[in-house]
Image 1 (cartoon, rainbow, N blue to C red):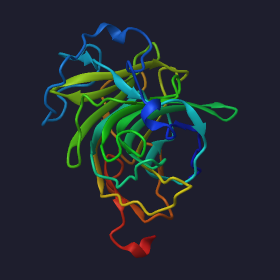
Image 2 (image 1 turned 90 degrees about the vertical axis):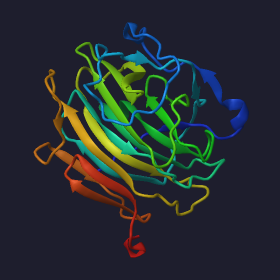
Image 3 (image 1 turned 135 degrees about the vertical axis):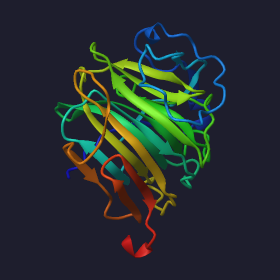
Amino acid sequence: MRLWNVTRWCMLTGLAAALAIAAPASSGTGAGLPVCGAPGPASTGPPTGPATVDSPYACRAGGSALESEKIGFTPSGYHHLGAGTRGEWGGVSGRFSVVDGSVRPQTYDFVVGRFMAKRDLGGGRIAWLEAGWSETGWASPGRQHIYTFDTNTNRWQFYDQYSVRPGDQVWLDISTDRNGIWRAWLWWNDRWNLLTQQRLPLGPVARIEQYVEVHVDPSRQVKLDLPKVAVDNVQLRPVGGGPARYWREDVATETAAPSRGGFCLDWKTRYDTWTAGDCEDSAKD
């Protein structure tokens, strides 16, 4: 498979001064949802229904989110483990486990487990929205965050009101409505929390990705340890609405696993249940 390469906007130099407090990136008014207020405890059970603005007790993430400055660079050292659809869908949802990725502070290292909706606009431009959990070398190193990234703002947004740590599991959803507004949701405190909504040049359908993604700072090469990230219950929303369906082998799919770096991808059920992380046999590097 030909992996796409894009410019990531990240921040490292002047870290303490550069991180600013800002409202979660959003286009529109949050669909009129009430502010979530105190986040409450993490959910211990799966979602009870799809993520929509009409979901019972749905709310939008309140407070502020840490936001990185826009300092552009095109880093090397990416490792992608997961899959993407060949065709277009209306959204994706599922569960990721959270691990400690041994990311080094004051570096461009990062580890994320994320979903993405994207479209190739031509001319080297790609529009997308992604959501998941992250551990980075520039935002509270050593801590895991719920995050979003979108090409309207070209910024990482960290939602630290939702405290996650290694061993936790998080349910996420990226989906759209018929007006082409894409939303990222987190299942927390037994309700859907809207992280961000964006009117992106995707339209009401997009190609979907599910990835564990690792980036090693190219100026400070090292082997990062990555305990196995478990992903399951991955479901796709069909074009035009209707109930979600599991991402199985009858969905036209491209898979990606690195040929270097010591990371391995293990499909338990193609393509809705899988793990990615350090290979059990180091000879697989």
